[in-house]
Length: 231
Image (cartoon, rainbow, N blue to C red):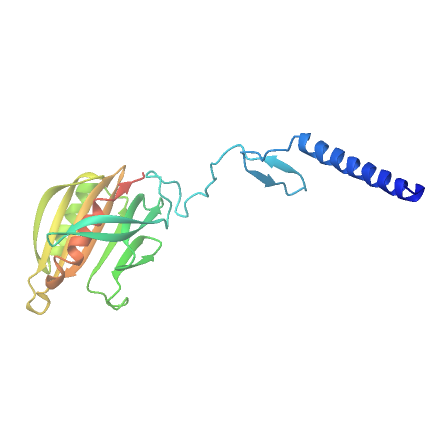
């Protein structure tokens, strides 16, 4: 065999041995496993482990919430209306200036916030001249004085009835129902809830037509059961 051929064979054998050695080293090198914990990028260029899954939330727009729901938070609920169960889409409101929280149906009512009251108007009504709407206001006067003043005001144009009722979250309240005795306004009714609130009073009025007594009046009654006093 020629000397050149022998050198070629030896060179090939040496290269094969080197390749096998490299492959064996790679097989024996331990591989890193991915961390089970998520990693976030630090704004300064580093990384840090996530130590908590809790997310900080901003304070409610209307102030501190007693119910845990923020002002403007939306969620679904269920009510009984005209003998049938209905899913409703609620928006929570927090108004600590007036001293209450409540849920309202944002698909049925438009919310209007004024300095001295919250108003919820049927989406089907003229906002400037509504027939079906609910308003919540606050008075610094004692409950008995507010009731007396309301009875005097309402009795001028309506037949009124007064009774005691219990709201789910607000407790025992005075309820005044006024049905107009004016023949031209016979289809309009008004219900008023007078609610003791600390040293003052929350007054809830809702207006509705006779044909909407089981519609909007029914929705308003169930909204009031979600009312929570914050003062």
